[in-house]
Image: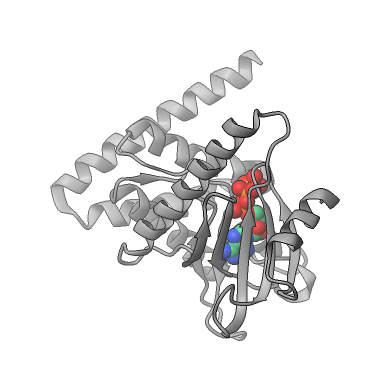
Length: 263
Ligand SMILES: Nc1ncnc2c1ncn2[C@@H]1O[C@H](COP(=O)(O)OP(=O)(O)OP(=O)(O)O)[C@@H](O)[C@H]1O
């Protein structure tokens, strides 16, 4: 992580507010903090910072950062209000400077298997003595599908639906029931576009095929089962919309295959 960026963040924060860098993505650097940004509460929080991009004109850069930070904050706030949909709680937003504070989700998986995103979770069951087809994996993937179903049914798309952008949480350490949360709405949008929804499903399918090819068929089936369950709750209207989305998903998949054959 660049020293400049770290220095900027430490200069910006209240002196002594402890933050630890954990990830550098294409858009943002992400930190954890054991302290709430402005309340005495402790817990675990995420600070997501979009640093200035030197290759952009400073005024354009400022405008873009502000636009994207506000966009993500606004979307998270709307999504948080949807019953059953699980996204991180927005704690604070300083759009002008490119900072978002969010609720921290997830945990370290047992036996050093890494952070509890869907990608590492599936690896945990696919390696060592794990059973990749056990009921915990099946249930979790159906719940992931339901989360995507809820998102789409309510008129939103994620825009970067990879298995790292799905974080799993449990209420207790010994629990075997995992609750998926969708994170990283930097490319998310309010949209009823069938194409965008088909692309969301395709991006996740590709992510699963590329990291868990041996079990991908069953995994994607369970995801789609959970997804369909949400639409089917809405009777005939749900069935019609479900058909539209799954048809487009197949078309997007076909286009993807053609593209990879042509190279
Ligand atoms: N609310 C959260 N709780 C726990 N971890 C989080 C949270 N938000 C982000 N992270 C961690 O930080 C990483 C990067 O965050 P995020 O995906 O939002 O940033 P990004 O810059 O858009 O990343 P990328 O370009 O890789 O998509 C995530 O993959 C995750 O490991």
